[in-house]
Amino acid sequence: MSPQLESEVAELESAEDFLEHFSVAYDPHVVQVYRLHILQRFHDYLSRSDTAGGPTRDDMRASLALAYDDFVRSDARTEKVFRVFKRAAGITTIPVANIGRMKH
Image (tube, helix red, strand yellow):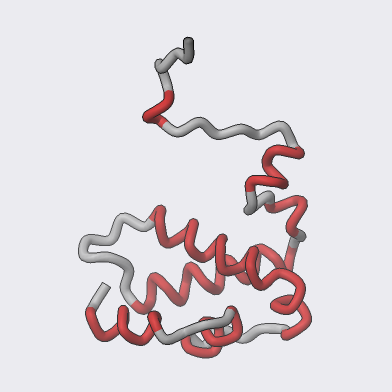
């Protein structure tokens, strides 16, 4: 990520700030209900990006638009962004570092 983009993003505080900064049209009601889910999904999408030098402005805009759209079309329970929803659905993740370790 460029230093300028990193500086711009560092100043954004809310889901609305991110959506407005990256010019993603949004329904305030959707954001009010799913703001943390949208931001977490945005982060998840960015972490999967393998762009050399970090995500570009276009990568960030596309990831944010996709994250927002996930919650326009679905809901938090279905999307299972946070661990509590994953656990309730029987989905468990184990860190790679813990695989093969036995507790005595």
